[in-house]
Amino acid sequence: MILPDEFREFAVAAAGTSGALIGLLFVALSVFPERIWKAATHVEYHARASAALIRCCCRWRC
Image (cartoon, rainbow, N blue to C red; front, side):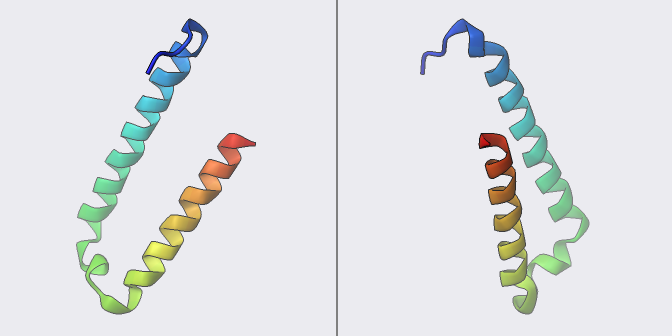
C-alpha cells in the first residue's frame, strides 16, 4: 500500500494506537480471566465490546 508523504505520520500514529489498544485488551483478559468463560455474560461482553468499537470508529470518521 502506497501512501502519500502527508499521511506517513498518521499511519505511524494509527499503528501505534492500534498496538496500544491490543495491549490493553490482553491486559484486560489477563486481569479478569474468570469473567470471560462464564456463559451468561459472554454475549454481554461481546455486545459491549462491539458497541465500544463501533462508537470509536464513528467518532474517528466524523
